[in-house]
Length: 120
Image (tube, rainbow, N blue to C red; front, side, top):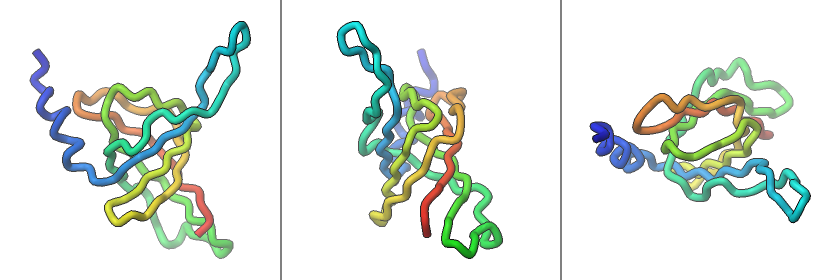
């Protein structure tokens, strides 16, 4: 019996952001295997936590880069290099890219390191 089963169902109810994640997957076409961009999840409840956002790191040229962390349910395999589009509670869409391997050690969610890399 999983004592965290209730937490696994309850945590996404507190997340008001929505993520659409695309990434490269091996797709077999007959005898040939190609790497194609596929949608991994769409409109998935999540939570973005900003890390290291400082006004001093924003440059004159209008780039807006900062580190963020994504909390999302377990059971989703999100490869490094994936593109993550997050729509917040106010309807603002922000594009991120997956910076590295996620941490799946929690029963209720997994955490992914992301980098925002857009023109401001």
